[in-house]
Structure formats: structure tokens, C-alpha cells
Image 1 (cartoon, helix red, strand yellow):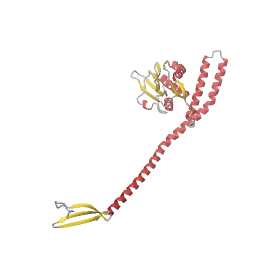
Image 2 (cartoon, one colour):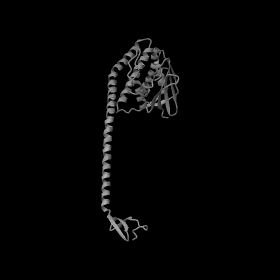
Image 3 (cartoon, helix red, strand yellow):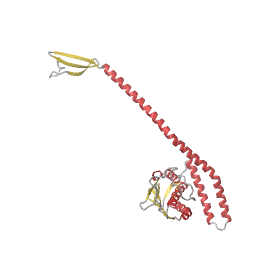
Image 4 (cartoon, one colour):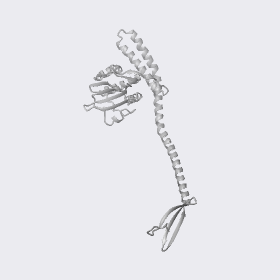
Length: 300
């Protein structure tokens, strides 16, 4: 009689007896009390079976998702690996083929220096060939994944001074004036690679400048920054996002004497910056012209 609520309504309770669980429903019909009991053992067995099936399906789904993700990732990375392999093979092959004629050029320049009374220009030619040989070695090292060459302190101020001096003839030919302002700055890196980056930034500035290119080196305890600013028309909005992308579209040359451009120079600067744990950025000035900035950690 206690199983029926005081207001006469039906009542359902779960009862445990003999290690089993029953669901008991009690109703009052007039003066009679009617009870119905349901053994929950089969319901529990079915619930446990459903849970096992769900867990098994979930585990299989996770395994399949992981395998699918790995397969998709491999397919996505394969073209990148192939492109990187092709790039390294090209650099290695080109470097190997250039080494012999460059050695001959250096030898002939040294022989010419011994014979001519005025050695100033020939000395510059010999210096250029030595720098080209160093750049070639740096390219081969960058293309060889087996090499782990130790970095050395590089005087950025002296390096930029040499780069600006080497770029003077090209700037003079275009009627562009170069200016250089430096602060003492030393970074741990690869001199030939940093020289390539400086040459590429200067070449870009000279080609787009109207009258002047300003090279400014600033330094803090944590980083050194090289800024190359020109007074040209600036960088087009549609070109700026892909400026440091390999083989990015470049404006068509208007001068018949202009050498062909392949869209590689600034992408190589980006590679060199990454190799030195640095960054390279570009923006347009409000007064006109573009500024390219190479930022490198000083390690202090």
C-alpha cells in the first residue's frame, strides 16, 4: 500500500532484489492495487551492447580519420618535397657548372693585374671574382642538406659598405645616387649569403629609383635592420603580397637594354632571411617610393 502515492496517483520505482533490478509500477483501481514489474536486465544488456558498438565505431572512425589525414597530408606535401628537391638539384648543378669558368676568370684577372701598371680597376675585378666564388660556395652549401656549417660573426656595416661600392657603377649608369648610413652591427651568419641579400636589395632599389637610393643600417641589442629606400613609383598593390614569392610576376621591361628579370632576387632574400632566423618586409612610403627592410637577430 506504501507503493501508492497519497493522492492516489500511480508510482514507478526501481527495486533491487536477488542481485537484479526491477522497475515496478503501482496503480490503484478502486479499492484494488495493481502492480507490474519489469526485469531491467535485458535493457541493461542492450544498453551495454550499444555502448560497446559506439565505442568500437568511434575507435575505428578515429583510426580511419588519422589514416585519411596522413594520406591527404602526404599527397599535399609531395609536390612541395618534389619542388624543393628540384630546386636543390638545379642549384647544385648550376653551381658545379659555374665553378670552372669562374676559376678561370679569377686566374685571368690575377694575371692581368700583374701585367697592367694601373691596377685599381683590375683589383676590383679580382675582388669581384673572389666574392662570386664565395657566393657560389654559399649557394652550394644552402642546396646541400647534409651540410651544417658553423656561423661566423659578420660586420654588417662593412659588408653594406662594400655592397654599395660595388653597386656604384650600375647606379651611375642609371643616374641614381646612393647614400649609406650605418651603425655598428654584427650578426652571426654566413657572409656570402648576407652579401647576396644586400646586393639583391640594392639592385631592386636602383632599378626602381628615380634619383636616389638610401641604405640605412640601425642596430639594437636584439636585432639589426637594413632598410633600402628608393624614390621610385612604389610597389603596385597587386604585386606587394607576392613580392617575395619565387617566380612572382614582374612588370614588363620597357628598355631594350634591360636584362631579363625572373622574379627570383627578392625571393632569395626571403630565403636568406629565414636561414638567419630573420625577416624581410616591404612597404610604400607616403612620400613615394618603396622601402625594403631586412631584420636579423644580433644574438646579444
